[in-house]
Length: 88
Image 1 (tube, helix red, strand yellow):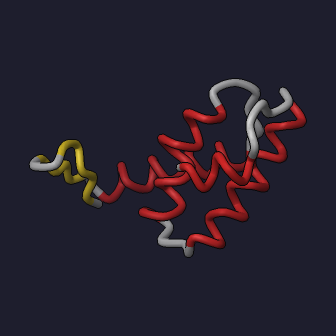
Image 2 (cartoon, one colour; image 1 turned 180 degrees about the horizontal axis):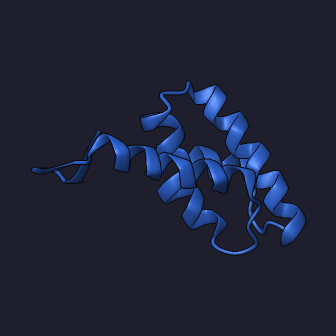
Image 3 (cartoon, helix red, strand yellow; image 1 turned 135 degrees about the horizontal axis):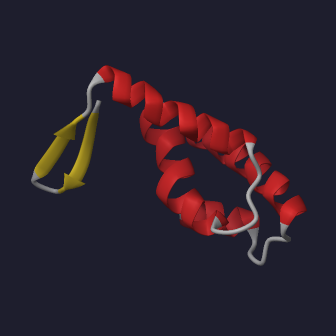
C-alpha cells in the first residue's frame, strides 16, 4: 500500500500493517461515535472508502450517510449530512 505523506514523500506500508489499518476503520464504520464525527469523516472514513476500498462516489456517499445517521443517535448532528459529505 502506498500513502502520500507529503507531495514528494511516499510511505510504503507492509501488507500486514495495511490489513490492520483497514480492520480498525471497518470497526469505526460499525460503531457510531458522539464526538469528532466531522474529523473522522474528513480524515478517515471518506478517504478510506474512496482510496482504499475503491468504491464509487455513490457507494461511499451512502455508506457515509448511513454511518452518520447512526452517529446522530448518540449525539445529534449539528450539520447538514449531505452538504458535509459533499464538502469532504
